Amino acid sequence: MSEERQNQESVTDQLIVRRQKMDELKERGVDPFGSRYERTHYSAQLHDLFEEQTKEELTEAGHRVKIAGRMMTKRGKGKAGFAHLKDKNGTIQIYVRKDAVGDEQYDTFQTADLGDFLGIEGTVMKTNTGEVTVRAEELTYLSKALRPLPDKYHGLTNVEQKYRQRYLDLISNEGSMDRFTKRSQIIQEIRRYLNDRDYLEVETPLLHTIAGGAAARPFITHHNALDMELYLRIAIELHLKRLIVGGMEKVYEIGRVFRNEGIDTTHNPEFTMMELYTAFHDVDDVMDLTEDLIRTVTERVLGTTDIPYGEDTIHIGQKWARRHMVDLIKEETGIDFFKHHTDDEARALAKEHGVEIDDYAAFGHVVNEFFETFVEHKLVQPTFVYGHPLEISPLAKKNQEDPRFTDRFELFIAKHEYANAFSELNDPIDQRERFEAQMKEKDQGNDEAHDIDEEFIEALEYGMPPTGGLGIGIDRLVMLLTDSHTIRDILLFPTMKPTDNH
RNA sequence: GAGCCAUUAGCUCAGUCGGUAGAGCAACUGACUUUUAAUCAGUGGGUCGCAGGUUCGAAUCCUGCAUGGCUCACCA
Image (cartoon, rainbow, N blue to C red):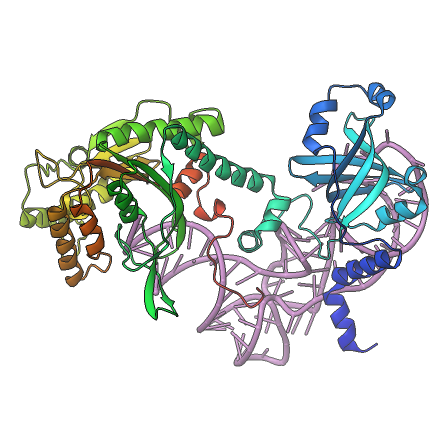
């Protein structure tokens, strides 16, 4: 045997053994990748049904069941052995005796590897230590695992591998499966809440000819047949408002949005947004709706409204604070932006307080910077911050009493933003002016300013009723409700750079 | 984009002062018919992330690169 070949064998040691076992199964006429298996129970059902019964009662009753799952542990005892099979709801122990299944099937059991899928038909029993167990009479091979699973005790802890090979994380880390189950439930409960209130769920295009509705840089793609550039959407907003023009009155969409930005613990290039529009409502109605929606979903999914998040306990059930952005800034800094209102005054205050601002910054940008610098990180309990400056809110209605501000709010919990909402701007003349102001910012260097969407303005010209709109970052909400502090922990397959190996 | 840290067996991790690689689980062989992180005896398994450099000698020191993590910046 050459040195080279020896080396090759050593590298793939366990892979070779498992492939050999697969071949041996085939030689004995056992399909290593079997077919459908009709089970009578899930593991959790067996525990629920028989946990309370005694060993003797179960032995006497001899309930026949068929179960299936992935073998996670195995303890051989000579002519008998135990193993745990994992299925959707948990694990169930099996007890395999040579005298019960016969020589051939016992041999199959003995050579089965951790990770293989087995089907077991047998009777329900209880062990001396009181564990509900299926005593095997018929063993069916359902699938061979050709690679070994992560450590059965520690699970998979390699962070990178958890993200790249999420299936391994799900198999070996219970907390991970729980988290993604909750994610699914949260989205399901949002749908239920809205459907119960006669909102219509719709699907609008992901491919946009103009990337509008938010301040962000888009991903650009290309359509071959039309030979044109298209943008992946950065928001759902402008299409849903067209549907409000079209008379749908209550619409929402839950879907993926793409923003060409950096990646960190709270940002992934693609993320899930829920946007909702209600005709004849205003920003105050949306506040009520948002509070009730999140409270209801939290209660239904978690069974409580006092939720741990890191060091804090967030009280979702209490009445949420509603504070004007300018008042909050005044509380933290003593500066009253209701009084200092020219662009020059605001810029001077920024300089004085060491707040960095862009060259194109006007009054509203400065106010927003002050909020982000001095206030945002202090908002732990749910707080609606309303009254955003006009310059940073090109799609929101002006406030009637003070047109420097808009009828808009953002929801802050645990120092992060979860929702953004406003009384939608339905005046097409004003909307055009706002877009034009954005274009001016773009010329001055703001590469995230909105583009003018002429077709959207045309839609407004046909008349859009007064409308309350809302956007909720679903990923952030899932993070909050699962006490996750990295967006990658609640995205099944977060965006990753490719490696040589994968 | 910047700083700091990490990368060793399939997985979880040690590795001293620079002297050429270790454990547990997993795997293999054997024993064991109620175990449960099964146990007992034995065996095999390594491009120490990659590429250079320093050195008689590098997992270890230096440089660059890759991937990831954290912090900051950017960004809702």
